[in-house]
View (tube, one colour):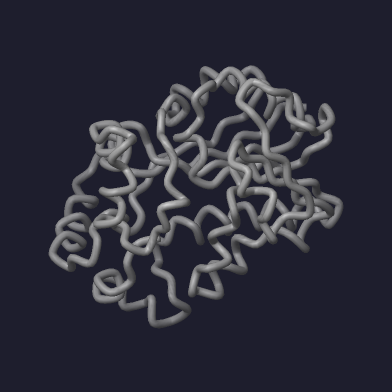
Length: 250
């Protein structure tokens, strides 16, 4: 979560509700919410990489409400390789799994797979994509937000050894807890990678890049201003975030 002080000066509309007009979480979960409303109360959702539910600590009520899927679907199932998922209070059901294992979910039983900043941690795209494909019913959606491999977040993260990520993020994202920082791989973080592992013959693709709020500026207003200015000059392939909404073909 970006530090609020410099962002409030750059985005004065944050005074109205606590979020900016380019808030990535509000953009992403607004579309997820539309799919939930469209599919109705019997929807089954998998939160892929659900973690401990750190978003419940977000001081912005509107963003917490947008991200809380429980109560808006028949069942929300959390999947993660971290045991912390077992204590996530935002889920109806939680499973800690190992990479390579079959997910404890039946074939074709899930309507939406939602993944929030988890795809950059996937070490085995073949396993992840095949298991998502197996559990997702025809007509179901994969919804993911993740850093773009070729954006400044992706390039910066790959340039810094994983063992130093916690120390660096303490300065660049001071509000992010150390327990919410995990090793990154960036193997499923480009439009090409999505087409490779979720082929267009099997999935309808809506994948795009975007720059939202400056995310790694610490508490520096100068760094936030420079980042915002550079965003206006960034070509689409180099924008920081990747939004992916993939519909499994009937």
